[in-house]
Amino acid sequence: MATEWRKEAVDVLGEERFLLDPASREKLSKDYYWYSPVLEPLLREKLADGVAAPTDERELAAALAFAYRHRLPITVRGAGTGNYGQAVPLEGGIVLDVSGLNRVLEIGPGYARVQCGVRMGALEKRAREQGQELRIYPSTYAKATIGGFVCGGSGGIGSISWGNLWDGNVLEAIVYTLEERPRRLTVHGADLLPYIHNYGTTGVVTELVIPLAPRVEWAQSVVSFESFDDALAVSEALAGDDSIRKRLVSAVEWPIPAFFKPLAKAFRQGAAALLLETEDGSLEAVSALAAARGGAIEHVIPPERYRQGIGLSDFTWNHTTLWALKTEPSITYLQADFSLGKVAEQARRLKAEFGDEVLLHLEWIRVSGELVPTALPLVRYTDASRLYEIVAFCESIGVVIYDPHTWILEDGGRGEANVMQRKKRENDPLGLLNPGKLRTEGA
Image 1 (cartoon, rainbow, N blue to C red):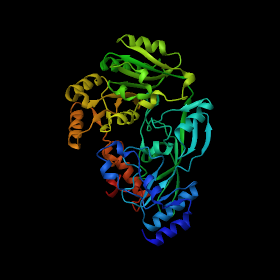
Image 2: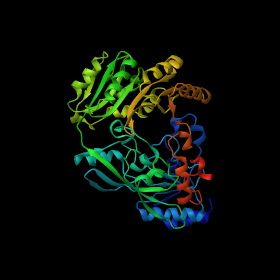
Image 3: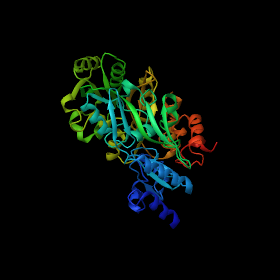
Image 4: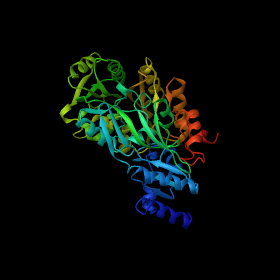
């Protein structure tokens, strides 16, 4: 990196806002890509040349104009809780750490206007104090930023009722372009599509308006079953029962609960389980549904203890992978959608083929109003060839795989490639926004 480049960056952005020390560059060039043994060796050496850490939009715009002038790549980073290398700078340049844009600007009836660096756990707390709550959030909500979730995620806890990010869960965004004079765009409605799950390739989101739901008093419960078949059947019945309000329905096969050391007493040895968040007063109905398949409630966290310590959602979605890795460091995962009405058959075929090489947990969600059994299966990893044999088998039985072992947005299966390609050309004419993450950016 040229001395002139370094000196001008400090002059323009200030010593406190442009970081050059090795420790900051190393730390802020990483995310949770190490969940993937495929990505880890490919990304471990990637390093930013410097880190810009703005605290307001004026500083952010100055950093973008500086990058444009010097033809420097910009990789946007929130809390770095993504799993696919979204925040890893493939071509050096500047990591733009937007976690300092962290003000809650307004909480109104049914919505919140926030800067992109607001932590979702803090926003949930503020909203619940005012009689509201987040609609959806990832299992990493305590650390994850709202901007990182919108630009790198898809759904999570609450998606069983409210769908994924594309289901009206983003109302407005403020976006900056990467041009000689960065433009500040206000984006609504269908125009939001190129900025949701975009890895920061089409623009830099600095502010968001998201819908809030009325606060619900949630009871958390663990329900045990003799077989995973029984747990799946009850999870499907509960997911589709609109008389029971719910935030989380997660079916987990044994031995996955054995990985959940802080909650060891909540699970029966050898039993499959459901991890649930349902409305206060619903446990009698839940118990009746479970009893029809021989299930019983083993553990309850009452509503008055909600968010007063570790909760059941901290063991679901991709936090399941994290707990498994603490016990078996060779474990990795896949992302999958099973087929409604065929999920039990598909699960049985997977288990018959791979046994405990593939361990199943499913989280039920809605997509465009329709129930979807989604999953993040654990895989006892041996090598990439075997991993993709498992992927091929899944696809052969109708299980859709979204590959978490790639940093290419389209290859992960969640991006709208054509829409993003057009918007990238419009907002990023030099192709400097997170280059290498969008396959079609050079098309």
